Image (cartoon, rainbow over all chains, first blue to last red; front, side, top):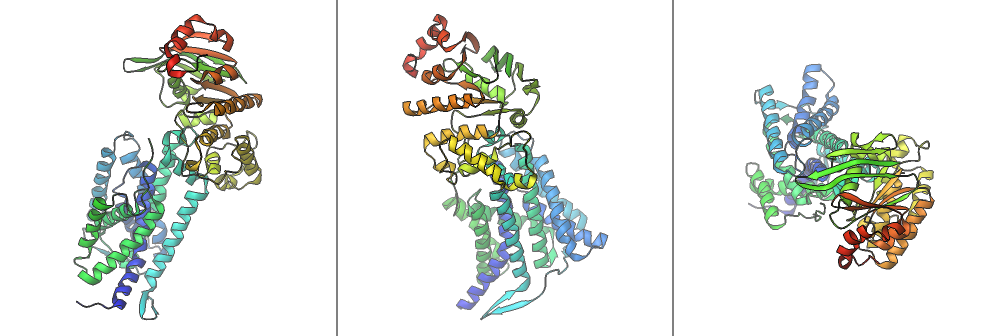
Length: 295
Length: 254
């Protein structure tokens, strides 16, 4: 086993580029956690389900390939809203276990529906992204992943703009910090939370489509690893920290790239998942965690 | 303006509010006082809808507040402050006001400026409210970084930003020193001059006796006296129930 610095940097570059998908998923987890202080474990699965819906709109309706990036996120947004009503809206506010269990149930439900509809076999996703490859000195950069990253940055910028510059976003953050005061300032809590689920769902749908397009395949085997990687990103970023989730997404991508180089594709995820435990034990507030302050 | 009829709230076996009636007139500062646990804060929470009453009616003009959701009561014209400060700490001072902002009826602006808050006339109005609250130079500070007195003033400003018909002040002087209480007296009187209607729940007698027009005294969830500050001060029943029992704890019964 011998790697020179070029191998290492190359795998970091690949990892960071792919990490933009994890950053999107982590951002979605964080949006929902920020709004309700609860985890939606079915979130990553809803993104994959959105990607499936996008793919089916191509095969069944014969739409042009790029339409997957329209149908997918919309479907994922609708699934997000359904998850909100099924697992969160009517659960007692103080009960943290019930929505968590419900969302695990929803995760397996979505998985089962996908397996049932596809007979469990992977489907190939059209190569909508250009198959270009650039060289930057000694390092190669995959053009499709570069587009994935650029597109992710645009989505993140839109989310940040919404959250920090619009009344809707400020209302969401106000609800997150002081739910009772926000309600009594005239911010409709339930509608705000529902909107957050839709917004996060759309984000997950984009992530699912980008993942499928860059891997070239959609499989029910994607949901669980993506869920866990989303959780890792959320934990490393510090539960509820938007900026943390984005940075952690790229960091987890980079770590994954390194593990891939050092231990190969079969063992890669083992080490990535170990990160979750390492952080939960030694840095439970993550790298950018804020102390949660609310009654 | 605000009329409460036969209001009752039981928590299990505890009768927090037990048959309360009062009527607040337009432009009046109305005091609700009583010993700890007499049902004052519960009354405020019932009016703004944190929990539903066991029985009774709460009318704002001809709107039955009991029939609408808490956030709709803000549209109907109810705003409040909190005994323990509940600002949006990660938002700036300006954003705290904007998130609660309602345009004056008849001057509502389009959704673009509503979303992005860019309209100059609204910015000027928010700035005016900040000046009134003595926070004119703090607009871009995070609310959590303000000093205690400033946070209290920001809470008051946030309640005013909703353009309410009535403002509920839940122990606004709690934790204040006497200079701050004096400042708050001026502020409440200024609000009254601006034509606002106020329901004041308070322990600090200096504030209550200086700013209110009428007072209702609660004990064990029931009204035991009603009248002007002077009448209340001279009421034997009140002295027994309130000042007698709690002068050491409150130190404000002079």
